[in-house]
Length: 485
Image (tube, rainbow, N blue to C red):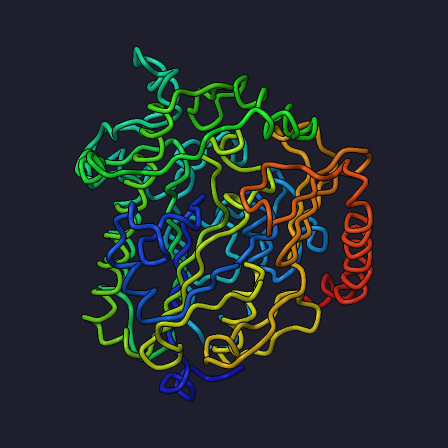
């Protein structure tokens, strides 16, 4: 073990900020001026961002388990939101001398699994459907609301609104602004930094914001900032939805039945309803951006920012009605491609955009690399350090994502996505259906070429690549269960 006193001066503090369900097109400096994100814009301008970062699973739990294990879902066994995980590479950081703290959302199961952290101040989903040891899990946000004799608003509360079914999950936050889950999480993080962070020991601080995951429930002051902004909303085309495989058609119907996360989904939502949903979603991102600024200021005030690496990302995106779909669980770009920004006064190249394909889980290997902790040989994640230091590298030839069934995505045994720079294929186990997109001529993924005989050779090439990838994965990860801790 490395003694903290030996490495404090050279080992950077690492601040990993993860939002929940944030699309790539939500940050102004990434080319989307309809978003109001001055603090994230600063990180983009002064740091390095990845233009093609792809998650390994289009759902919260498997995406996060993959990120914190450095393994694809099929390797670590966490293939859907109902699977548990309790170990991570954070254990290696803590063993090496880092002070490891989580504030906010991690989505472990059980929810309070240590996962290598010395301290966890947990804030979980706005709406929770899973029980904890036979009773509801009480997080820090629940306790704060209770001290004000308040409870979190749930879908049964929103259903009382006369226009509930037209809102598509977009609601005004009904309680004091400081008690919104994202404001609360950001304030809790700045409080912890101000009170406990110290230059005497390198810090790994993971901050997990619950938003902009639905319900899309920003505070009024954030909503008002979008009142006159022109927010683009893509048209839902009949040929697009008609060409989707049966599992995705079933998913659309299932979302109507479940009203997952207080979204009364509609097969034919109005443009006005979709614009409101998009505005509220972006307003929630703006709230988080405000808190990112306060977190940076708190680190600065403690003299820690100069020796810190700040990483900003999300666990997956949100279709927001694009392709006629709601939320996640599909393999469209709106879900799979997420923002990934690295910023540091010393360690990271400034003003750099990296076009190379990378996997979201590569964040973990990169953190271990900068922390001076060896990257386990079983890890499928790869360090991004060469990119971050301005060196040329080709990136991955393919990126992959996969998902099994859960209570929302019912009609799937297992689906796998493979993407190159120009092609994407989605394979469904035990099904003759699938998706194939020529991303060069069809970047919006509206023309499914799966059954087009002119593209049989391309389809076969990508399916063969999946087969080879799985075999190589099996060999590489064969010792992870014995070695992982």
